[in-house]
Image (cartoon, rainbow, N blue to C red):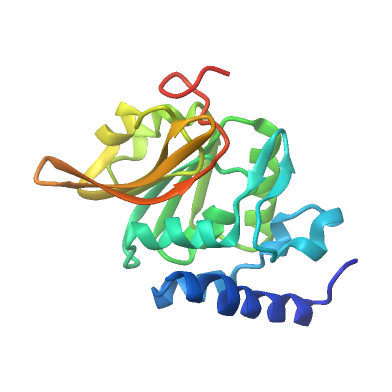
Length: 218
C-alpha cells in the first residue's frame, strides 16, 4: 500500500506524539527534524506502509534503518546547536544523515557498502540535502581529512570505541556509539573536555555490527 503525502505527514506527527515524546525526546530541534524528514523516502517500496512504525526495517545487504525512537535518542544525545561539523559512521539508507543535516552545519558520513552509499547519495540529491558529504570507506578509521569533528555518531556496534574516532573528536566534543558484543550493547555518550573523557550510559540497545579494522572482523 502506497500512502499519499498527507498520510505520511500524519504518520510523522503520530510518530512524534506516540513514539518519541512519551519516551523522553524533548529537544524541540530534534522533534522538528524528525517531523521534517520523510522517513518513507528511505524505505523500500514494499515497506512504505511500515515506514513510520515503531521498529527497525531492512534496507538490504543485511543492514537496517533504525527504529525512529533510537534515531531521535542518539541525535538528542549529541546535543547539537546548529554550528557543528558532524561525522557519521554507517550511512546505511541515509535517514540518520538527513536528520543530522537539519541540525548542524555539515555532515560527513562514511559507509562501507557501495550499494547503500549509492542509494543514499541519490536520496540526498533528490531531497536537496546539500550539506551532506559521503564516501565509501572503513568507517572505523573515521575521516581524518575533515577532522576534528564537534560530534561523532556511530550507527553500528563495535566491541570497543575505535581509537581513530576518539582522536578525530574535537575538544570539547561528543561521541555517541553503541558498544558491546554482537548480542546487545550499551549506547554510550562520550564527552571530551580539556583532554578528559567522560562516559554516560544512555540505554541498552541492539545494533548491526561495526565492521572494520578497528571494529569487528567481517
